[in-house]
Every structure is written in C-alpha cells, then in structure tokens.
Amino acid sequence: MATNLAPPPAARSGVVPVIAPMWFLLAVGFSAAGGLARVPFPGGQLVILALTLAAIFAVTAVAPVRAGVDSLSVNRMVGFHAVRLVGAAFVVLGARGLVAPEFATRAGWGDVAAALAAIAFVALPALRTRWLLNAWNVFGLLDLIVAVGTATIVVATGRIPGMQPILQLPLSLVPLFFVPVLVASHIALFRRINAR
Image (tube, rainbow, N blue to C red; front, top):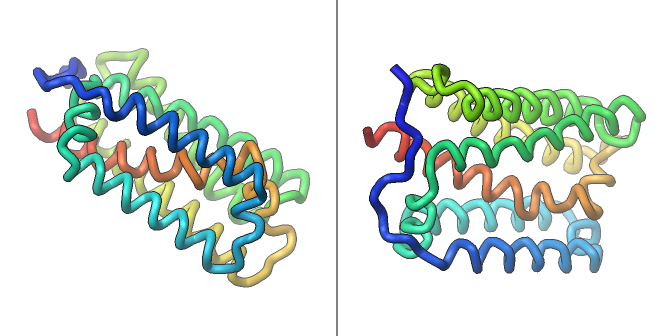
C-alpha cells in the first residue's frame, strides 16, 4: 500500500525559508574566500560535522524549524534528494583523474542511485510503500556517511589525486550545505515515514 505523502496538519513556520538561503549564501562566501581549502586537516571535517549536527538538532529539537520541516510533504522532502545527481560530476572527475577514484566511485554512484530512487518515488506513487521508503532512507543516509568517511580518509592520507575540486566552488557547497541538509532530511524522514 502506498504511503500518503501529503504534509501533516502542522503549523507553518517561516524560519526554514529564511535560514536555508542564509546558510547557503554563507557557504558560498566561505567557499569563495577559500575557506575549506585553507583549513588544515581535520578542520574541514570538523566544520562539516558541526554543520551536520546543528542541522540534525534543528530539525529534531528547535520547534520553529521542526514545524517548518513538518509542513513540507514527504514527497517534497524525498524529491529534494534529486540534487544528489551531482554525484555524476564526482564520477566524471574521478574518470579524469581529478579526484580520488575511491571517492568518485563510492560517493558518485551512491548519490546517483539515491537521486534516481528519489525521483522514482515522486514520479511513481505505487513505489511509496513504507518499507521501500525506509529502505531508501537507510541507503541514502549510509551513502552520505560513506562519502564523507571516504573523503576524510583520502585527505588524511594525502592521496593524489585527492579532493581538491570538492574544496572549491561550486562543489564545495556539497559538504558545506547539501550534505548537512540531506543528512538532517533523512533523520526527519525516518520520523515522518514511520509516524503513520
């Protein structure tokens, strides 16, 4: 039986539409100033971890943010993961020898698979069973963890090619904005999918 993806009756919050663009612009500014590229290891990883933990805390424990997220349909939250098609860029960079091949393979193909599944859920309502949504949600979260973990190992061991393109715009927005937001959305989706 397909899961109803309509938003629950929740109070709308104007906080998320304000905070998300501000965070995005700060990430752009930080990247344009060479922020990630300048921070010595493990500074960049700590920044990404702090942003991810802050995003998770916000969607679970900050009432206005949680209300804003709860006002979104599950369909919209899942559909947002289509941005993970950016994984194709990682695969291309890996094939050109510009990023570590293990990162390109794990993060690239994992993100593409998560994005295509998200698009399928939005386009094909029959796929929206609780079981399939939960399976995709687990896969998507693990993919992000594996991608960040692999990137950390690549940087820590000084491999060449390393992660240089990911430290500069526009791809630096992936770890500084999209990874934390996507991880937090997976956490929120676990609660939403299984609350019915």
